[in-house]
Length: 453
Image (cartoon, rainbow, N blue to C red):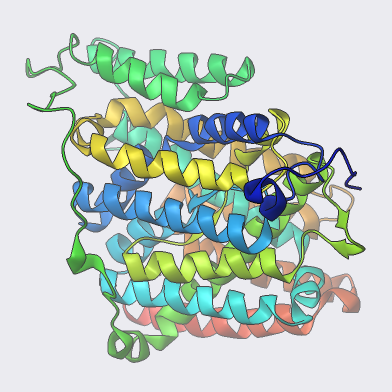
């Protein structure tokens, strides 16, 4: 429950209800700075992941920053919540590694999929169907999606950091004689320690430390891990070629393959946004204001609109960041936090030369820890029923062993349905589950025909 404190002074205070929510302008700015420090790593990590789709790293730095600026401003101005947005760490990997690299779908078609998922999110945010979808989607499968993607992100971090090396028997651990491997291992320990100590900008600090250390560490071929640019500051220029890079014809011509992934972009953003925004607003004590729920249609519409704008700008799904919690802990209670975050992202666009110099060894520990953090959802699985455990574990196993997330999602859904039928749990067979089953059966048939499953 929000509280009345003092009297508002100034149009910024009145617009954002700063005093009404028991905060001050100074506290909101500090909270915005703290939130930015906690999530600034995305400017480095997201371009590294999107580069797997063949997209230019500099281009992705600019689109990542632009998406974070627009998304955070939308949430601040539309919903007045202390929640910052940026390209999501799960959807970017699905976009680059699965849709483009594995399935061979062109980035323009993938951006179209993100657009359609965002539009669907906005549409449902304005109706009462939002709650029905939350209740109709099986929690075990939702947890399995989160954990499987987490395992995949950690796997990418292990490979990019040189900790996992392909060999004749699959993967083997990297050579401890390689200084770059030792640097990455040290980065994992450092990032984990900073996370345990709850340092707000821990992820960013670890990236900076490893990048600087990389200037003095040489790889097996004698080159330094980090290659510094000639200039650390340069005027930003946006890659206009990324704007509106959609291909609706390609989307329709591959509809059987791309529809399930499009639904993932929608459902992934939908459930991540729901859980993240609920956690943040509850932690901030923002449950009701003027008799209305603070987390209402405006908040969900802002999150969905951010994904639409992100696809227009040329990046993957944009969603609310759980790192916003550190800003709430610092006292943030209003959308002024998001405005501050947006301003800091905008200023960071002048640092793009130094951002492009960050080596994979520096970002790998962040990917590993983010993936392990997502795997922690295994603790939420219901061990009392086999369907609550077997389906998510199957999804994780298939993803880790084969790297094929879409097949793991399809088989996880079908296994959950089969176990529900076997256990005569008819209430679990919701229309949403049965519809998804049908869609993924078609996907498996088409993918197997193309040799992809």
